[in-house]
Picture 1 (cartoon, rainbow, N blue to C red):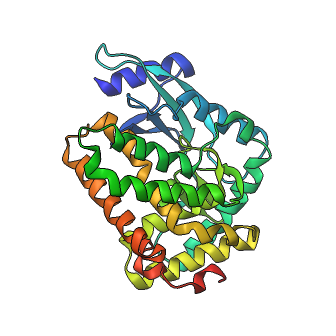
Picture 2 (picture 1 turned 90 degrees about the horizontal axis):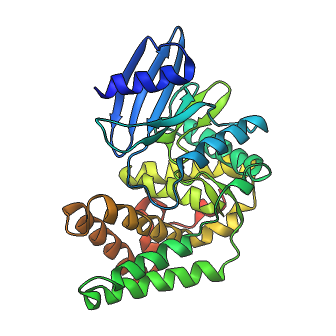
Length: 315
């Protein structure tokens, strides 16, 4: 039934049918692979409720603007609209071209290319797309998470966590971080690499903010790698990035605080999707508490163990 409704919605826009429509991801959003001849597209159907910062229509407008201004490293949106499943409320969707190339892997070559392309995207998109985008800040993530915890039934139980979140927010607010266009979810799962470079997709969290926040997302996702790989891959990413934009080095001194902000920003969405009584929520609070407890003792202890040296700052 879902596939039929998708097919009908797309036919009304394109006036022709797709040969293949396949659900490839049934996570928070539904992602479909579309095939027509030799062409492949991906359709994202947004799942309500959406955080206030995510606007499906804004993502479509952003991608159209990036294409119009010839910004490298982004997919092209070819359609947008809304579709209702089984009599429910209409859900927004966008259809984008397939990102060129293959998924990136955990090696230095791919991470260096990723860092270089991310820096290029920051610089090029800042000159063209930021007028469309809201402003966001890691400070906001920390402060909002603290406020959410204060509004719970047992605010005293979170007093220490809130204090550490607020201290991280103060450190970020006092810093002079370089601001520009940021992707918002810059990780290798949201990119593909070909001979022409790295192409990014999934721009729903794009905004104006500190470019170092995008890099901190890379460091945050490297938690799953072994210690040796963390250092090697992170250094490769920074080498690629600083080949294009050397101004980032000073901002990365705030990496511990930026990692805390990465942990904190998940709370609003989790509270709406799974609720504050779920195991997922409890796990997120436990993880955030662990990170901020380490922050209280030693800032560098927040970093993944493979990133706790200081030599990567200048590599």
